[in-house]
Length: 574
Image 1 (spheres, rainbow, N blue to C red):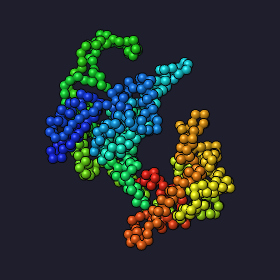
Image 2: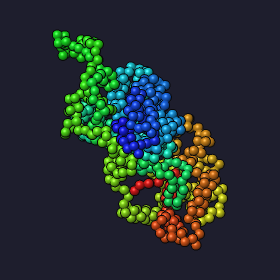
Image 3: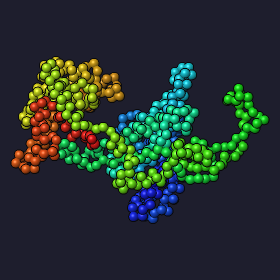
Image 4: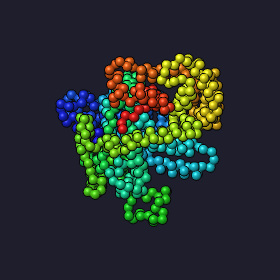
């Protein structure tokens, strides 16, 4: 598939790329493909890279079985998948390093990610583990431990999620303009009744899992297509959004038929990557069916010859005989699409055309987004909540059901702060005084204190003391310090992530934050452009918006401003 796309890119002499780098697992295939492509262009610079993009650089040529068979590499492999994404994992990721070093303008991904992940066969590994557990007589031995860790390393979803995390960081960090994925349906466009399964099951659970991963992959690409650029710098706040460089364009083309073919040859037949040796069992030595499956029964003889025959090489789907290919591609079964058909669609996408076959665009056009009625009814829901707050004299602040805990923390903090200052007027109070006033509020208002503690928020008091309830949303079970002993650094991290922080240092953060907001909305009245902005549709969060937010007590509007401006959490598509 990748070779056909490269040929398509080189088909127009005046539009040939300056450079093409191809990647793959087999160095011999890479070299052969490079030789073929070099004959098509005298101006394009070609290079090839080999290795497994789903693991770290040190493991890229080892093979998954080898990685999982050794204790040290297996543990590192699991950590790379399961641990929170950090800079060390990124730097050691082969995919991330490859994009970092090549600095491409466009990435075309024709790797069958769903196959690579789902065909590790979670089901077989689970059955092997269950068998080991059932036969274990005592404590866990090395063999059982290996099976357990191998099963963990076979989980599909964590691998796919980590792959997408690394991919997104790599595309953003290195200014890739477009990412175009050649995806898969998992079944060549057929349904659960597909008669070709690579398995003894029908329908094959592994094949269904592959389709599940293909669908999950498409949805994650859909999310990437709705994600803002992750660069922290080079942005400009325009009262409503951070204006910054456009994020990479995300597209996916999903063939739904047999992709064929690469070549038709006569040669050695391979099964699951291994050359097939011819064996023989003569009729006069036929076995009784009752004993035919005994492990010690070996009535066959190796001939010393290799199985050779005519075959069609379909690329990643493997080689098939004439009759297998004839059956598979027949009308009414999987049928067929050529790599060149797909390459033409890719070329049209790269040139800015609309092929009509982009999965991400199709999802964009078929989903139901926000509606006018939804926006209209939102105000009615808020009005009902305000009425009930007034009727029962109970504020509706945060229940820690939405997450992250920082949202509930910010809502409680601004609720307490708003009792002592007008959020839109110049703040004369210093952070120490504001801290003391907020402490007095949390001391006097038992319901405010109890409600926040009961939903998992701790309260940080001046002098670094804390109040806490039975449960804590922060830290998570993975962040919990050993023996519950908290360092000052951890204490400050927890306070920032999800504890109501009444210390002067955090009050200074709030004062600076509100000063920034006040400065943003307090432009000179005599400026004609400003007056137009205030009465026109140019800006949502204008002066009147904030006045109404204060009048109605819409503290959520202030927190949404923080998420949009400080956390880059905006929605970029409706």
